[in-house]
Image 1 (cartoon, rainbow, N blue to C red):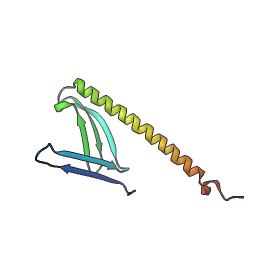
Image 2: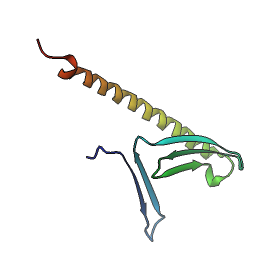
Image 3: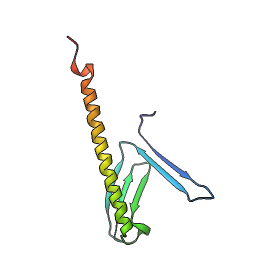
Image 4: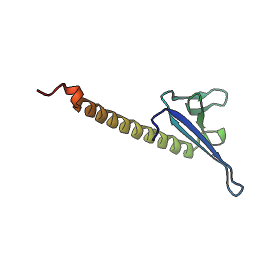
Length: 108
């Protein structure tokens, strides 16, 4: 298992199906931004590093639909779950680090 940061991008092209693009960010340089494209106008969400970008916007880059609202809610809920999981694991790791013999000092 590699502990080094990385961004992994794959593209699968098969004649019998639609292309598939996969992006995995495992890097501390990941950035996230959201906004409203004023020229359209339409909302967007972007995850990016210097290796890859993922840009999410409304269906067909058009007006906001009920399906777009549902997708935005799913993203929101998934991000909240990701935050909760990260906070829990971070707290557990801090507890484990504090419980090591090195952290408590030499035995008497």
